Image 1 (cartoon, rainbow, N blue to C red):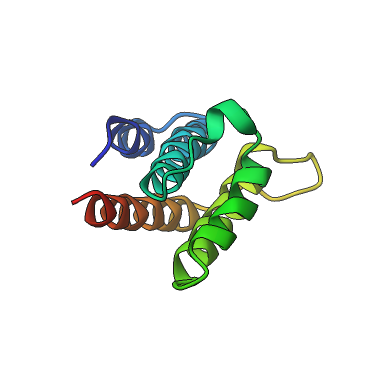
Image 2: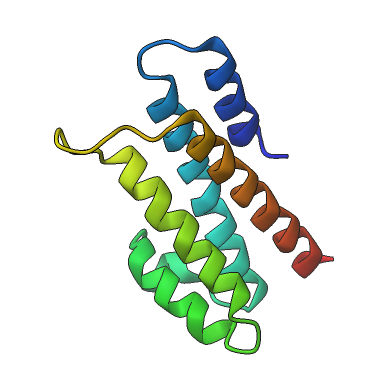
Length: 119
């Protein structure tokens, strides 16, 4: 498990007024690392070509993993959930504890997929 996911879980335990948002940000950072590693596993050094544009990277994932669309679908779902949680508008409800825990588990699952791709 990545340090960021461990820190996200710790933020949930510690609580506080911004614990859910802090955990969501840490989880999204872990997801960004997963995306970079998935692209690197396919030989795509994205940082030189598209920089830190993760929406573009998500599109690249769909192309590189066309043989297994489950991977880019899970990554895109996690990205949308975490983006909504991290960039909450005043008229939106905060994510629930259950939603944040689900997102952490989803990114943990994606990290396991990355490890399987590398080995």
